[in-house]
Length: 316
Image 1 (cartoon, one colour):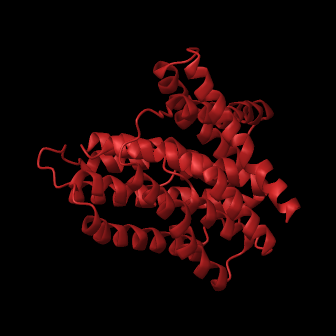
Image 2 (cartoon, rainbow, N blue to C red):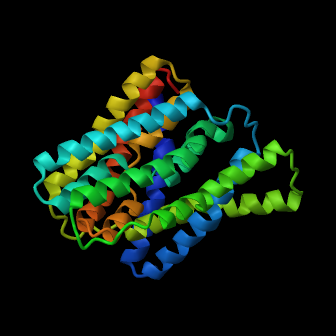
Image 3 (spheres, one colour):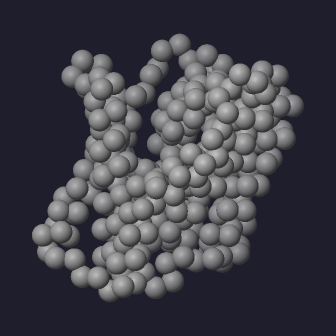
């Protein structure tokens, strides 16, 4: 048990140390919001796509897309979103808060933490199931989030959703493009020159530290309102949903790396993208921002506990 705890701590703690460094740097006035915008641009437009390209390109991708894993993850996401869509308004009277609560209960920081944590836990080859989910679940989560926020908020003044624009944003998402480009290169047996692979590797190594430091800069601890609701949503996102989704998956017989992919997908804390979408759609973005803070900090405990449990059970 102690060995599993140490392994789990070694996988998770470095991520939160980098987040803490970002928060401290902001507190002492060394970085600001301008840094966050620039860092996020580099991470999500350049570095993270390169990380995923490098990972997929460097390993054997035969059977990269597992239809059973993709189907299970997609159905589970839709089921969780549907349950929260119908149940949340029965307990939360304020429409904008209900909408933000429902979104935060199923949408996590999967793209960033998924790629980082899977590589940390399973290595390049073992991380492929996690990475293979990204091109599928990112559009699914985006569509579900828009539906939940738009319908539950019931705000006639909310900005209308431009379906064409959203579709283009999803298709041209650099993270998805990076994965698909690597698959294309592998399929066509394209051999990149050493200088290209080295440059891609250098750019990819920026993703983890820069993204996590930027996340730490964005954390705000001032006056968390509706703290009870935030805690309830955090418990649903980090404990209830993973238990309900992963328990059947365990008995279905998914492989260790597939279970790891599902664990990361459904156990990841709320991300800044939740806040941005809630803000643009005039929902309770303050609640969503507080949810990002509390769930991120809480996930240090829940994800270590989850990894320990799975290692003890011999799942991964």
